[in-house]
View 1 (cartoon, protein in one colour):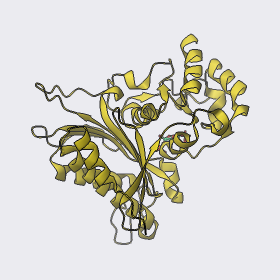
View 2 (cartoon, helix red, strand yellow; view 1 turned 180 degrees about the vertical axis):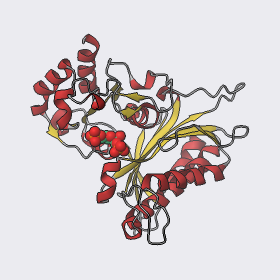
View 3 (tube, rainbow, N blue to C red; view 1 turned 90 degrees about the vertical axis):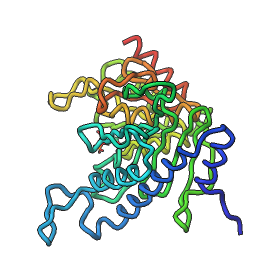
View 4 (spheres, rainbow, N blue to C red; view 1 turned 120 degrees about the horizontal axis):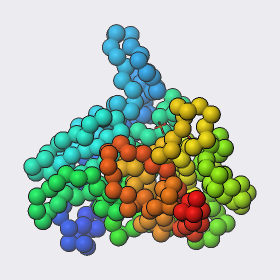
Amino acid sequence: MELEQTFMNFLLHHQERHNRTYHFLILMDAIISAAKHIEHYYITGALKGNLGCTDRVNVQGEDVMQMDDIAHEIIIHYLKTTGRVIRAVSEESKDIIPLDEKGGRYFIYFDPLDGSSNVAHGLPVGFLFGIAKRNLDGPEDFHLRAGKDYIAAGMFVIPTGTLTIAFREAGTWRFHIDETMNYVKPVRIILPDTPDTWELSFNATNRYTYRKEVRDWVRQNERRYTFRYLGALAGDFHRILTRGGMFMYPAIVNHPDPKKLRPEGKLRLMYEASVVAFMCREAGGHAVNEHGTPILDIEPKDHHQRTALYVGSKPLVEDIARVLEGG
Ligand code: AFP
């Protein structure tokens, strides 16, 4: 019987090889515990009437929490116990959450349950996170970090039992949960070079709402690749990492309903776009916004800032970036 290396053991060796402290292990242990908790809750949530409900009251007359609020609370609970987090940004909290402003060492930016339209069906959703380190050489000014300053970024695809995580200049790795609920068997992810397996992923109903250059690019290129779309970034990007190709969520500039226009894009910079862009870079890929600017270079002005996103295999992203820059 062959037993596999666990994530925590992998991380321990990683930290030692790079002469790093064990603080990051403590943080990752909390993140893993939170993810397992959310995963378990998600699998059993329908039984408790907790999947995908809004403004509902249960038989005891209590408010039924939505799954994304539950996921948020679970993560904050585990992060608090570490004493290592200065501040957290969560999709589910309007304000930045101060945790341990004196002793904390890491900033964390996360989306506790991304892809909420899948929740009611029990289909895959994501828990995405990016981590940056405080200034250790002087006073901390608490500025929001750009993706290029993250030290790690990752995602759990829930409830599939997978964790994909990238470490700065140390690659992107995938783990699977085993029978004992440990994430095991590190596999390094490198985007495939050859286009044979490449896929395109975007919300096809939006195609007529893109700016002309992007519409033209889609028309000219889409037949070359297989098309897949789940509607949850973590799941869609998980496929792109393995198969290559590109996930895109362009700016919506031509919608007949003005309320649906999204000239800045839909996805959130700090806990969606920068997270997948970081993982993609470490797997050999690239990511840009609607102007062709690398996602990882964008300095956030607001913690819930939105962006357009084109992420995936370098040749494909560079090709559309030329179109975006010229437009
Ligand atoms: P929700 O969490 O609001 O469902 O949004 C999910 C998401 O941010 C991302 O995970 C998807 O890739 C994208 O939005 C899907 O958006 P569309 O439903 O417009 O295709």
